[in-house]
Picture 1: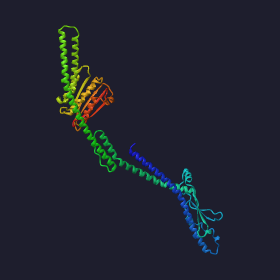
Picture 2: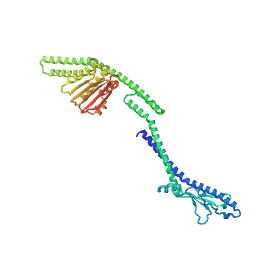
Picture 3: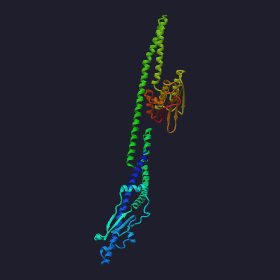
Picture 4: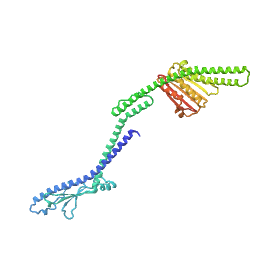
Length: 456
């Protein structure tokens, strides 16, 4: 899952939790606001009745105080204005059959669902009545009792919650949208960092990153750039070391070729001469004791060893591109394999592009790759047809493509993982030249392709 989606999902979860908390708070506040309205109504009515009580008491001083109760004419329109909606007020002591004076309750609030009307009183409790004395200095003046209407209180709470939730939902949606855009914008540079790392994985180590405003991303970009520089230096050092090792190995191959030619070749020639002498002497003596036959067998074995030695010397000595050029050396390589035996598979050579000016390490590497691939295809597969294609790709990417494909079957994955000296050698040569090597399945066999940059 993408990081942007993870952060947005977490943000939405936080918004949902905050919205739930706001809903609970709004429910509690709206429900308890009825208690506050009840207390305020009782206080306002008590103060109004207190003024009325003292006014009547002063005007009718000859009347006993108990005859003033209940306070005359307290059930008026002015008193109704002091009572909050959903609250009922009564005067104590009340006269017979006197009903409480209630504020407006019809159409008050919105009708709540049943689950809300059942849950809220269960968790928040019921509303208590509020008692206020008419006059703190005259206890006989009576009291005011305010009682909230439970149904009206729940309706008011539900309406308040709906109003608050509408605003909260709009704010939550706006916060989620703006925060998501901000998160996406803040993480947008991560795509450039990933692209740079992918280019580095493909060998483009000097990948320049843009300057990031975020300090953390700037530190990551700096670390990526430093890593690319170190990788490039390490790659250049490894390539130089590989080239040096290849040069040393080529020198050793040439030295070994001289030793084999001088020592092994001369000794084999001497053995062949001795065998011919023995065979000639035995033939002159006209003795049928098998010595001539043994001498001929020694001669045949010596000829076989000398042929094998010549093949080894061809592989060990200086490559032909240094002498004939790449194109002529490839033609000579294919002709030499064709001339070995008519039973060998057909080898097709396809040369494309201008190969005349290719020389030096690039030509040597291309020749060695073609030589090793042909050798593997001829010795380790049952191929009937082998194709060697060498193409020069001109333009900005001036490179040489060598592809050897056969129809002898084989497992490309197993061959690619092989640690044989031949494949290891051409891998080292191609890597030292700054190129790439791939081993893939072909239509009926294997395809080995190497790309060698000519600018290396």
